[in-house]
Image 1: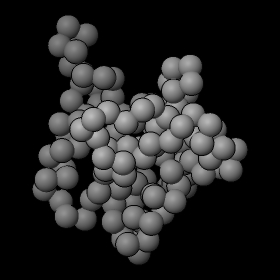
Image 2 (image 1 turned 90 degrees about the horizontal axis):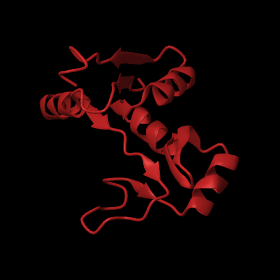
Image 3 (image 1 turned 90 degrees about the vertical axis):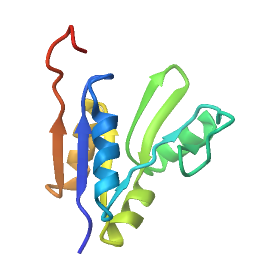
Image 4 (image 1 turned 30 degrees about the vertical axis):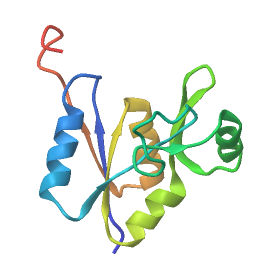
Length: 130
Protein backbone atom coordinates (compact mmCIF):
# COMPACT_ATOMS: atom_id res chain seq x y z
CA UNK A 1 0.00 0.00 0.00
CA UNK A 2 1.29 3.47 -0.90
CA UNK A 3 1.98 5.98 1.83
CA UNK A 4 -0.26 8.99 2.34
CA UNK A 5 0.70 12.63 1.93
CA UNK A 6 0.38 14.80 5.05
CA UNK A 7 0.35 18.50 4.22
CA UNK A 8 0.96 21.12 6.92
CA UNK A 9 0.50 24.75 5.89
CA UNK A 10 0.70 27.81 8.10
CA UNK A 11 2.07 31.33 8.21
CA UNK A 12 5.76 31.52 9.10
CA UNK A 13 6.25 31.46 12.86
CA UNK A 14 2.99 29.67 13.72
CA UNK A 15 4.54 26.39 14.89
CA UNK A 16 4.32 24.01 11.92
CA UNK A 17 8.00 23.03 12.15
CA UNK A 18 7.55 22.16 15.83
CA UNK A 19 4.53 20.02 14.95
CA UNK A 20 6.45 18.27 12.15
CA UNK A 21 9.36 17.46 14.51
CA UNK A 22 6.99 16.01 17.12
CA UNK A 23 5.24 13.82 14.54
CA UNK A 24 8.57 12.59 13.16
CA UNK A 25 9.84 11.81 16.67
CA UNK A 26 6.75 9.78 17.54
CA UNK A 27 6.10 7.89 14.27
CA UNK A 28 8.45 5.53 12.46
CA UNK A 29 6.15 5.33 9.41
CA UNK A 30 6.40 9.06 8.57
CA UNK A 31 9.26 10.80 6.74
CA UNK A 32 9.83 14.45 5.98
CA UNK A 33 9.71 15.63 2.38
CA UNK A 34 13.06 17.23 1.55
CA UNK A 35 12.61 20.11 -0.87
CA UNK A 36 14.79 21.06 -3.80
CA UNK A 37 16.15 24.58 -4.19
CA UNK A 38 18.28 26.67 -6.49
CA UNK A 39 20.20 28.54 -3.82
CA UNK A 40 23.77 27.80 -2.82
CA UNK A 41 24.37 25.17 -0.16
CA UNK A 42 25.32 26.63 3.23
CA UNK A 43 28.36 25.24 5.11
CA UNK A 44 26.43 22.96 7.50
CA UNK A 45 23.89 21.68 4.97
CA UNK A 46 23.91 18.24 3.39
CA UNK A 47 22.59 17.64 -0.12
CA UNK A 48 19.62 15.26 0.04
CA UNK A 49 19.11 15.80 3.78
CA UNK A 50 18.50 19.54 4.12
CA UNK A 51 17.63 20.22 0.46
CA UNK A 52 18.38 18.88 -2.98
CA UNK A 53 20.60 21.62 -4.37
CA UNK A 54 20.46 22.60 -8.05
CA UNK A 55 21.56 25.62 -10.03
CA UNK A 56 18.73 27.83 -11.26
CA UNK A 57 19.39 26.48 -14.75
CA UNK A 58 19.14 22.85 -13.59
CA UNK A 59 15.99 23.67 -11.63
CA UNK A 60 14.32 25.27 -14.68
CA UNK A 61 15.25 22.25 -16.80
CA UNK A 62 13.52 19.99 -14.25
CA UNK A 63 10.47 22.29 -14.30
CA UNK A 64 10.32 21.92 -18.09
CA UNK A 65 10.63 18.13 -17.71
CA UNK A 66 7.66 18.15 -15.28
CA UNK A 67 9.77 16.64 -12.48
CA UNK A 68 8.20 18.67 -9.66
CA UNK A 69 5.06 17.95 -7.71
CA UNK A 70 4.98 21.65 -6.83
CA UNK A 71 7.42 24.51 -7.22
CA UNK A 72 7.64 28.26 -6.82
CA UNK A 73 10.02 31.05 -7.67
CA UNK A 74 10.15 32.52 -4.17
CA UNK A 75 12.50 35.35 -5.12
CA UNK A 76 13.78 36.25 -8.56
CA UNK A 77 15.94 33.31 -9.63
CA UNK A 78 15.41 31.46 -6.31
CA UNK A 79 13.33 28.33 -6.88
CA UNK A 80 11.99 25.85 -4.33
CA UNK A 81 9.98 22.72 -5.00
CA UNK A 82 9.22 19.05 -4.34
CA UNK A 83 10.59 16.35 -6.63
CA UNK A 84 8.01 13.78 -7.75
CA UNK A 85 10.64 11.02 -7.93
CA UNK A 86 11.60 11.43 -4.27
CA UNK A 87 7.98 11.45 -3.10
CA UNK A 88 7.07 8.39 -5.16
CA UNK A 89 10.11 6.44 -3.92
CA UNK A 90 9.03 7.04 -0.30
CA UNK A 91 5.36 6.30 -1.02
CA UNK A 92 6.24 3.03 -2.76
CA UNK A 93 7.88 1.88 0.51
CA UNK A 94 4.56 2.53 2.27
CA UNK A 95 6.00 5.53 4.10
CA UNK A 96 3.71 8.46 4.85
CA UNK A 97 5.25 11.78 3.82
CA UNK A 98 4.86 15.01 5.73
CA UNK A 99 5.21 18.36 3.95
CA UNK A 100 5.90 21.76 5.51
CA UNK A 101 4.72 24.07 2.72
CA UNK A 102 2.91 27.31 2.05
CA UNK A 103 -0.75 27.30 1.03
CA UNK A 104 -0.05 27.39 -2.72
CA UNK A 105 2.34 24.45 -2.44
CA UNK A 106 -0.21 22.55 -0.35
CA UNK A 107 -2.92 23.08 -2.97
CA UNK A 108 -0.61 21.80 -5.70
CA UNK A 109 0.24 18.72 -3.65
CA UNK A 110 -3.50 18.11 -3.10
CA UNK A 111 -4.04 18.14 -6.88
CA UNK A 112 -1.24 15.64 -7.36
CA UNK A 113 -2.35 13.37 -4.49
CA UNK A 114 -5.81 12.77 -5.94
CA UNK A 115 -7.51 12.38 -2.53
CA UNK A 116 -4.59 10.44 -1.05
CA UNK A 117 -3.64 13.28 1.29
CA UNK A 118 -4.44 14.75 4.67
CA UNK A 119 -4.12 18.54 4.73
CA UNK A 120 -3.95 20.79 7.80
CA UNK A 121 -3.78 24.55 8.00
CA UNK A 122 -2.34 25.75 11.30
CA UNK A 123 -4.07 28.97 12.31
CA UNK A 124 -2.20 31.16 14.80
CA UNK A 125 -4.19 32.19 17.84
CA UNK A 126 -3.82 35.86 16.95
CA UNK A 127 -1.76 38.33 14.94
CA UNK A 128 -0.16 39.49 18.19
CA UNK A 129 0.85 35.93 19.12
CA UNK A 130 2.21 35.32 15.62
